[in-house]
Image (cartoon, rainbow, N blue to C red; front, side, top):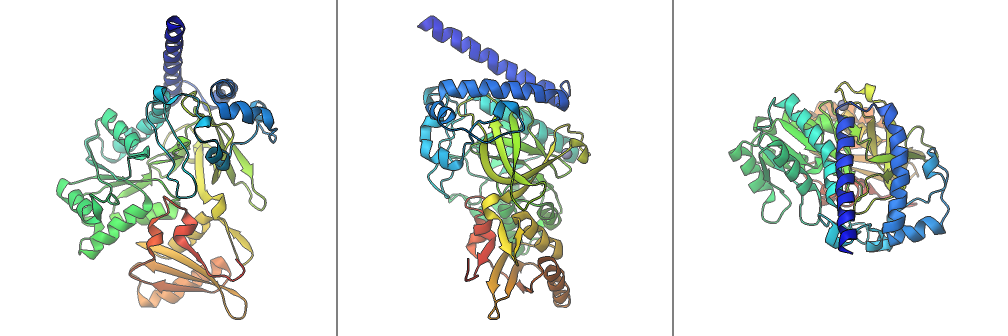
Length: 448
Ligand SMILES: [Zn+2]
């Protein structure tokens, strides 16, 4: 028994090493993307065998259901895994007992029962390798050094975010402070004062937190541009190119994506200095599931290839995404660019047109500069036509309001009223926890 356990541990260590070397070879350019796909399919085959053996949920799931077709032979007919499946399965989806994991996390549970998200060391390191490379590149491009004090502004507790960045900063020698303004022991006031007093140069936070801090500084008479912050990494909620630009402009800083991912699926793509997200090619086999009425954009479906604590097979992320070739970005990465457009559930029909969360955000931020917050209310007028009221916290010259309204009216093809305000519904802060739609859209239409 002991010998068997020992042999298994040795095999696992070897597998772990092989994975890290494989990722290193890919990141260093020794494996080209076109040659990687063959390996990813064979990894998919192995991981399906692995979950079939290790996870009681998958043992049933893979046998009892026949799934839809796939462009990848290895996934053809394999059933999808949905978030509903995960809530129902609980810990039975896990492929390792909890005594053998590295860390235990959960989803936030704001949109349903929390699901367990344990990570083993192979998960942490294979996912972290891409985040480390991305951070290193952006710090080199922005600061020319790792010596830039960084504020990690997100929860740790049951969520991986703070741990992931803490570990990467420590490995790269980036000095950091954990400074989450939403923590009851920190708050916006203390976070803002520490940023100033310590001379923090880089922030890692959600777009909502970047905006909330900018509002706070403005309220105490400090222009965010005058702070020591030169770089902001955003993550955790939808962030369009217009929002990156808006935050960059407000803060007089470079603003780029930190990573796109989730508690369940880890770091799926990482941001580059050019403002794009690049897919972590070695760790997933990705499918884009078509959605009626949408061209070229679909639901991102991931098969997690790393044999860790909880690999998911054909996991429907619920996120709208599209891929474009790596050559579309000038940063030098050879991984495909991943564009994320919000959640499938957050698609909204306005004036009989399907609108993606990203297209609404882009329309608002494309029309108004230096936005410290926004919310969109859709209503039905007495005569039955739909109307939109866009509320923004921003400094707008009274003379340009009509022009902004016209620009948005042309875009939405229905009457748009611009409401400049000093405060918005507290819901606008919750995008990272509940949903973009809950945070940004008020739907007053009678029929919906
Ligand atoms: Zn890039």
